[in-house]
Length: 152
View 1 (cartoon, rainbow, N blue to C red):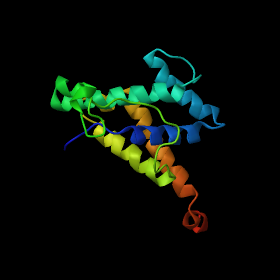
View 2: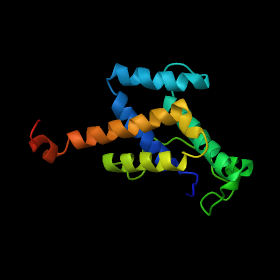
View 3: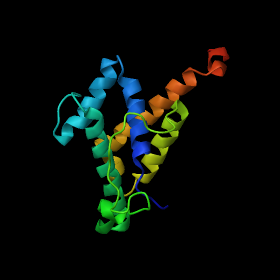
View 4: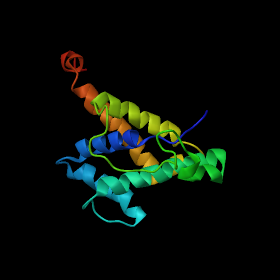
């Protein structure tokens, strides 16, 4: 298995999916708050999306560090033509290709790329894994085929 640092759009699509899940849903908001409060910030408040994205970015880097060594934990190690000085995270509320299905696929990609070492045991990883299931359920429940399927 090889792993890499996911791009901003991948993380931002997941955050867009989370925004959709927590919209007018205090239960979902409480679940998110319990995960993010361990990082030293409380409540959703202002710019929770950017803070969550940075935590996700750091978790992806930690997984890469556990897979490839400490050198990979530095954003400068992930230089590209687009990011000649190294990769950094920046929140964007309008990521490209932000469809419901793409959010699910981005979540799956993120989990795969961040599943190295013991990172998968973290609260944040487990939360994102739960988000994947809820996004899939939400998507399936809106399909006409699901609506037409027999109950029971």
